[in-house]
Length: 367
Ligand code: F6P
Image (cartoon, rainbow, N blue to C red):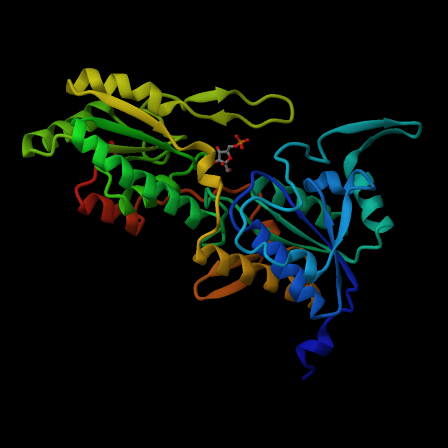
């Protein structure tokens, strides 16, 4: 049997890009890819601002191990990112007729003499990667998002950092809530899934956790708050996911989808706080954690996951396992076909252990 080294294809130059909203750990993946590639004598080209780096021919730079020294602990991405601009969506007019940007990306990929790509992103970016894979571009995807909503992987990097930040915020809100006997309604991100709200809510000892997967009933929430008052705990912490909605109602939007932009969720906490005040007779305050959840240094868990993802992505490329995504199946990092990932969202299962644990702790899920 041939050794894995013999099986490897001689990739000499690979590109790397980061797409979608940033998440803590992106730089850790970039660093891992550059270092792992260097140990296979492979050069890495950093493409700037997601697929823009493949649309304009001067938006790239060589990344050596020296260039990635010290970025493990830094949030954001040294390559820049964008969560708009699908190269397959926008046609450009040329003398040869209407073309989409994807053809241009393929041209630049070859102009840069790249052998393969590492595409780090969430559902949107991985969907674009899959389209390029179908066009014959050798690539591997790396799942990123604080929302933790990518299927086939138990964790995306960035999630643990967002949960840690939100937990710390909830801890801080406890003291002021208790001092003023208030209801604090904390809105967290997560898009249409409740992973951040559920984990941060349980870790922070919230009294009510509202997630998109379980439509809420304000009367039930008010009941829980009044029951706490009756016990002498005259304050309550409500953690609400930005995508949560009332029974029979709709999500709260800052902006509807339009053009190349997806809808922007937000405002659910501000919407429900006065209603809870009326129902409970208590004073309420709203706190929106927003983009703070995406900032800061990645936790050690996210650093390790991101580093393992990056190293494994290079290994998969060298082994010719293209069109795959690295995924965490504890304790292993495995490869799953991108085909199984795109177009799907990993929501919180209603019978999930953490949901049942929350109920066992007496936390109201608003139903
Ligand atoms: O997907 C990550 C995320 O932070 C979501 O939780 C949130 O809904 C969205 O991105 C916000 O996007 P933007 O940075 O465009 O406001």
